[in-house]
Image 1 (cartoon, rainbow, N blue to C red):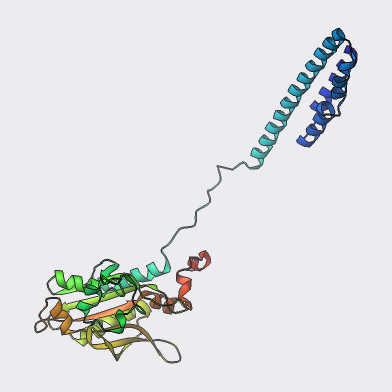
Image 2 (cartoon, helix red, strand yellow; image 1 turned 120 degrees about the vertical axis):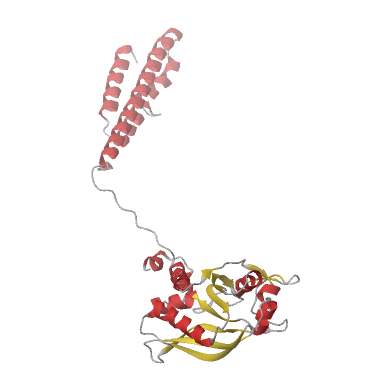
Length: 332
């Protein structure tokens, strides 16, 4: 191959590379002029048949050609890449003069909303909020609440033990907060105790091993069941409507005497729905906490936040409250 043929090959190759309109066409031009079956590759293979002087002369021309074509290919590749980037940027251009998209506002979880509503009702009645640890000793969780060692509630079928030997449990109710309050403060006192509690329950539509309670306690001189009923009536009407009534049915809890299950009137077939348990604080509990039961009396109640949330909002499966499904959460 002489110099004129090499120059003709250069012009044809540079023209094809420059004419490539997209990466695929450029790759085809590269293979045609720089690939293993290109005229350039064929000419390089024929160098061995030339004499030494001619081989050096033609070889230098072919190497220069290969370098020029490689440079031309790289430049055209960069040009096409820059053009594609400009096109993409133009297509994805944002109109900064238009109004911005407003992010969807967050909101508290349904359980948090209901818990806050319950607490707000009682703080409006003069109660204050008290909190305590979720990992408790058996003394606070059971003993001081008049729950004897042989009581079924203290078994592993009901209670989750952190250390059974040391009698350390995940609290089964927020009543230990009431005990801590009575041990450290003088009556009169009125507190509500919101928080997570734990039971060894199997998970189903109405049970969860973790749930939320708001318990209340009032201790003062002359407190009676009438005060308890009036307080719970105010609570029921604040949460469920001004026309609601409450009904107290006899029950039993180790730390209250007398005890009652509390129903609220509701538009259903039975006309009543159970919402909480309550009662007068057992004198034995007052005595254990250093309060004179001859001078003071009190009432206590415990409200399941999940139950109130399910009743108020028509939730039929407690698991929906814990599954973190964005579609469910967005409904509230």
